[in-house]
Length: 390
Image 1 (cartoon, rainbow, N blue to C red):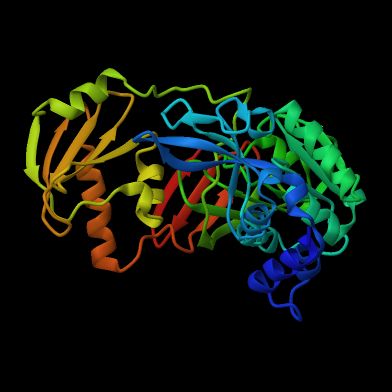
Image 2 (cartoon, rainbow, N blue to C red):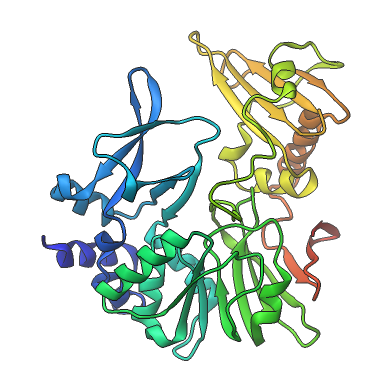
């Protein structure tokens, strides 16, 4: 298997060879060692499924897919691809969400570049498949790298595969939101998103150390440097990113089930309010700034969509407090009919943000300043606007 040539092509497509210190790590790291199997989204028997892809069964496809700049899902729910049977599929349903992956290389480098890693940085990074850890080891040396994951099997497999690739960093089982392995660290880079910046990160960072992470259910990359009072200050990076939310056990604790009562209501009820929306339909998860702003102002909304056989689209917004919205439009540019119910008007909140965007040309989350207190309260602010995450 000529993986070296495939890795070199990936590096050439991802970075500029003469200018990037990440070219050599990309060009010499055997990604296929870390992703021998993965789950692929497909359709089988008329329904959406996760289908197992086994690299050894098709080496040419293995090289093509693993050395592409793409994310490969390695774990769905509690089902790791390593333990699945050849030909196995899993129904793609609400309780079977991806729970681990090998992050696309370009995004991994976006996070590392935002961290401004130097030759002497002591780095803590999230583990997953171990591929991102291998890149860091190739860049810094394994003795400067600590990698953590909540899943004991992922840690065991990554440790073995890293050793096969010639790296022996510290790899430990750890809930990323709890106490971290003993530091201090000059850089903490998380490729899982967190609801808020854990206090343990601030304690583990060396003075002047930098953290880079994403906030759950947003596209926001937070870059912040530890300051003298134990907190941190920084900014929202210009790039956007989306990662799986950190979990605390074998699978996610579903606080919002697939078919809650509010979902049944949202599909059929007239609601307390029926209006015509100001703008064409938008499915909020497909956006970056609108989605992020809405999550900061009204966190915890579950977004769903449906397209009927005649092309009519309906999007839904659901919240655990019983608020819901249903917006339906026959065509892409038609104004939707909006039904809303519960204690809050979720679609009105969305339209308010879209009006803000139309009037100003952007939203204040772009380029916002970030302040994190020593007890983990994060404030995002720009031009008189602010939102708090805690």
